[in-house]
Amino acid sequence: MQVGSQINLTIQDIAFGGDGVGRTEECVVFVPYTAVGDQALVEITDVRKNFAKGRVLALNTPSPDREEPPCPHYQRCGGCQYQHLTYQAEFEAKKKQLVSCLSRLGGIKDLPELDTAFPAPQCYGYRNKLRLEAHPIPVPRGEPPQVDYGYFATDNKTFLRINGCRLARTELNKALPNAIKSDWGKSNAHKHKNERPGAVTLRIDSQGEIKYYFGFAPSLGWFREELAGVEYRVPVGSFWQVNPPVASKLLQTVDGWIKDLPVESLIDAYCGVGTFACALTKPFRDRLLIENDHAATEAAEYNLQQKMLGCQVLTDATEKALPKHLKKYDQDKTLVVLDPPRTGCQEQVLKTILENRPAFVLYVSCNPSTLARDLKKLVTEGPFSLEKLGVFDMFPRTAHFETAVLLKR
Image (cartoon, rainbow, N blue to C red; front, side, top):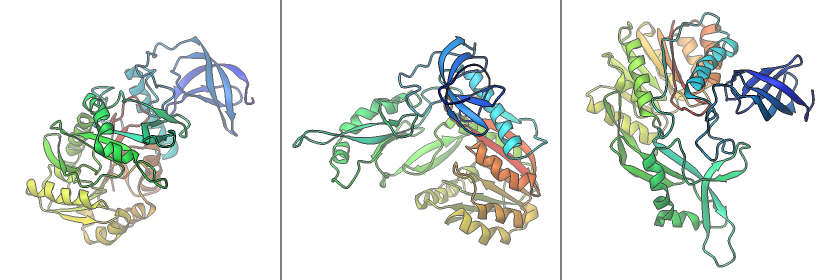
């Protein structure tokens, strides 16, 4: 097999990331924007040692899992991978991908049954945040500078101008033109030659209030948000879940997992604005929260005070603070919550947990690959067992989803 070869291929599976998977006598072939059951004429575009990549030239027999994508930018924009699938097929694929990642990459042989598999209530118009990159437009000398806003294409290099995103809330798409035409938007376009215009970000809170900013968020105050019946204050520039109905289900689920555990101390690492520390209804004796975003830790202290929950909040990186503080607790009565960024936990965080061995660990992840990598050390090679497993489709139509696991020492 070589680049340029054309083969007839039946798609048998969908890999994490969204590519369809077909198999020949020679190797596995990954083909984007395909569905299980597609029979297609495929041109090989890349050949590696153990696999090849291809693109569809013609669909000989389309899969019944297909539907028409509603977005005119689909397959050019790099944001979505599943608009050509029915949502049922997408969610089934994501459940299989989670199991595959944990068993294949994590080496976990005895996976528990999915305790919860929660599909997204809506596939489009769910995101409460819209962020578009800025791209200066060349203009004749003397003309005022202009900026286009959009996403990067599938090659992660080519700029794609858009006027809105089907995944974002309707209110954000409607507010976008006014933000770009505002004085702030005009100022963003008038950057000096050695400065690039900043991306535009629009956010809407649970009360319907919209705020926007260009580049990094200045001090724009706090939003009022709500998840699972709990109200939070969130700085406009700090992290918050983009799909509140799914995030609420996740919090309700893990609260059910934890409420009867024999633990008294909670360490909430990567805590953000204190989401888990506020949502978990168990009456912990001690609550330690760790977060490196100063604006978020201020909000976390406020949010817990409103619920009259005592806590200690540290503005520090988890990999620096956790080794200093976890050892101070009775490990037999301690629960550690990990909700790291997409890159997963740092090596020092995993080392600290393995050395101190708290009774329980709740790990929430938006990337099953890095989750599997970390669980290989904690479970496959470490002293923990995987007790509970849940998948929550926080990001429908994209390759991403949220996972929660409960580990027991």
